[in-house]
Figure (cartoon, rainbow, N blue to C red):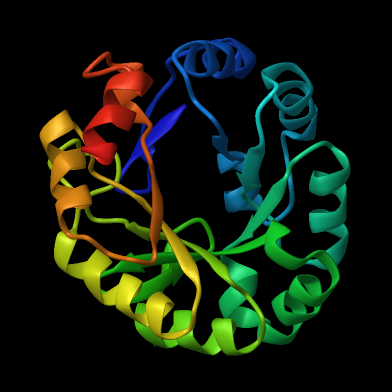
Length: 230
């Protein structure tokens, strides 16, 4: 299932079984998978652990999972289900001591989601905006030991209209200043969009998360990898 601009009333279901989608992307050359428990993000606790475990057990590649991970127990459960990395969003802003503790315990397996509307962090399944700038969040958490981030500008997510290059540049600069790495997610709808991301030459940009464009056949995983690598 995919949302447009984080709106739960604008959802599209592409596969009845998420494992089938995972197999398809791995078959096209995906080296890792990014999984979001959308129900969990809204409810505040993991809601689809069975599917997460099935994807992790079947795919044969590292799986990064987020959605509803707002306490240590939830993170432990997702990692125990087979996820290589756990992504925390709301908890990253609400309880920085928690994510610092988790980073100390699990190292690079802990990832902070820097989800934003108009440059300000959005939490609780993207439904609540805050006054915290993305750069502030990245620098603050990096100082507490978090070294991996996912930046998603909600305004473009799921639209296929193109990435937020300006916002990414600012977030990536904050990550680079803190010796951290960042994944970008949101708005990618063509190979040209991926080439534009690559052309920024951002040292902190470690990869790009693509969803709807793959589901709708705009390009394959292998074609996307080639566009990013030039």
